[in-house]
Length: 260
Image (tube, rainbow, N blue to C red):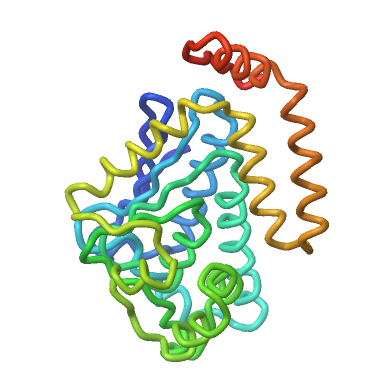
C-alpha cells in the first residue's frame, strides 16, 4: 500500500509509525486514517513485530486533531460513518495484541488525543499539550474520547476536559493519569524504546493475554474479570513459552521465548 501521510519503519522487533503531515500539524484526514488502518493490519500480521511506537512528524505536534475541512462537510448520515470509521481504527490499535506506545511530541488535540487514548500507554514530551476541544466546533469527540477518557482519568476530570475544551499541559496530564511519564523531547523516543526492549524480552503470548485481560476486564464486573483472568492464565499454562519461562528461571538462564 502506498503511504503518503504516514511512515512505517520496522527494526529490532519494533514498528515505528509516524503520522507525517507536519505542514498541518499531522491532522487526521480520511486518507491518513485509512493509511493507519493498513499499517496496523500489517503490524498485526507480522510475527516479527512485538511492540509499536506511534508518534508525529516534526516537533510541534503528535496529531493536532481532525481535518476541519472534512469535518465541515459532514451531515448526520456521513458524520456517523465518519466517527465509526475512526473508532474502528482506534479499536484495532487498542486491541492489536501488541503494545502500542504513544510518544506525544507536542499537540495531541481532538482526534490526536483520542488516538493516544487508544494506545497501550502514553509518554509525553515536556512541551506537549493535550485536549478534547470538539465542543468549540459544535460537535463532541467522535473517535472514542467520551468513553476512553472517562475510563482512564475518571468521570469528573473527563467532563471538565470535554466540556471546557481547554488544553492541559503534559505535567497536568501526568498528574491526572492521562500520560504515564513526561520526558524531555530528546528523550521521548529513547524512553519508549527502553520500555519496548523490556516488553520484547518477555513471552509474546503472555503479553498478549495480559493486555486482553486488562482491556476486556475494564468492561466487566470484578467477578467476570477475575474469571477471564483465570481462563487466560490457564491458556498460558498450555504454551511452550510457559514451559520455557519456568524452566529458564529454575535453571538460572535467560529464556528463549518463541510465541508458541
